[in-house]
Image (cartoon, rainbow, N blue to C red; front, side):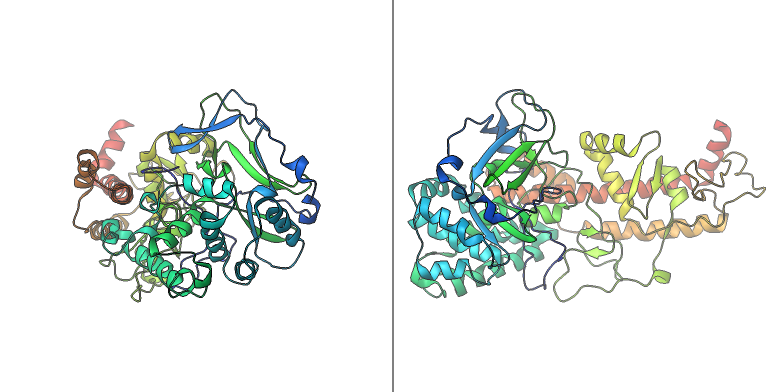
Length: 521
C-alpha cells in the first residue's frame, strides 16, 4: 500500500462533479472501460463452485509504488490475475432495489448475518461511502474470522494520508491543500458524531466507533480500497480483499471488472507482465494530484493532469490546482475570486509561445507535445521524465489566445527567417508565430503579470529547496508530514516549470533572440 509518492485512496467520478463545498466529493476507484451491463442476479450460483481455491499468479510484495501486488512470473496480456467470488467481498449498489438481496444473502451465508439496524442502514438511502464505513466498522469488531483478520491486517489510521486524516494541527503542513483538508476532516468528524460514535451517533446501539480515529480509519480505507463498476445500469461499490492492493499508474498494466455470469470480481492483465512487475490499475486517467491527495493520500511526480489556476481576478490571492481547464477543484472557503471576463484576461499568443518552447499541438484542445514527437511518443516520454510532463502541464495552465486569422506574410525582416505557413499538414490554419513590436511589448507585460502570479502561489513560508532538504534530512517525520511535504514539493515544481517556460518565452521576444535567429539562418 502506498506511502510517500505512492497510492492510498479511490474516487468516484460518475460525472456528478464535486458536491457542495460543505461536503467532500464521493470517491471510488474507476475502471475506465471496465463496465459490465449484465444482470447481477445471474451471478448467484453455487458457492462451492465460486469459492474453490485457485492458485494466483500474483502475490503481495514491495513495489516502486509501495506495498502492492507483484507478478510471480512472466504473464501474457489477458491473464486472469485474481478472481474473487461475490460471497467474499462487500458490495453496495447506488440503487437499493433489484437483485442485490441475493448477493447479500450469499455474503450472510458465508460470514453470518448482521443486526437488523445495520442491515437497514446498509440497504438504505445514505451515501454509499457512509454505508460501507458502517459495514466495515462492524465487520472489524464483530464479523467472521476472515473479515476480522483482514481488517486487522490493514494499515492503522496513523498510517493513512488521505486529506480527511489530517487533524487541524497537521493541516498547515499541507499548505495549498490545507483548506480542503479542513473540509474533509470536518465532514468526517460530523459523520462520526452524528452516525458512528458509540456515545452520540444514530447507530450508537451497534457500538461501531469508540473514537474519531476509529471512524477516520474506516472512512479512509473505504476511500482507498473501494472499486466501482456498473451492472445493469446501476453503479456498485465494492471492497475486494487482496485486489485492493493493486496500485495506481497512468501507464497501467491491468484492469478489473465484475463478471456477472461467473459471480465474481476479476483482475486481469491488459499488458504482458514480467516476474516481479507491480500490478497497476488506473484510479482515474484524469485525476490531478489534488484529487489523488484528497482521495488516496499520494501524488504522482509530473502528473499530466495538474493545472495552475491562472483565471482568478485577484492574482495575488493564493489559488489551488484546477482539475480541468476552467473548472476550479478546490475553492478557497467563502472567498473564491470570480473569474475574469474573457476580454479582461491577459493572454499569451499560442504560436510564439509554442515556438519558443519547442512545442507543437493545440493548447485549446489540451494536446501539446515536443516538436519531433507524436502524441503517443510524448506520453511515454512524460512518463519517464516528470520535468517534461510538468512543463507541458504548466503551458496548458496558461491563458492563451490561439489566433489563426492573421498570419504574417508581410515584408518584415523577421518573416524571411521564419517563413509563415498558411496551413498545417493536417489542413488546419497555422498558428501565427511572428509578432509586431507592439505585440511583443504587450506579451512581455502579460508574462510579467503571470510571473508575479506564480511568485504569489509560492508564498507559503517554505521554499522548494527547503522542502526538498527537509524531506531528505529529517528522519523523524510522520507519514502524514512526509506526504504533505511531497505534495508541497510537487506543487512548487509545477510553479517553477511555469516560471521557467514564461522566462524562455520572454527571452524569445527580445531583439537579441531575433538577431540570433537571423544569424543561425
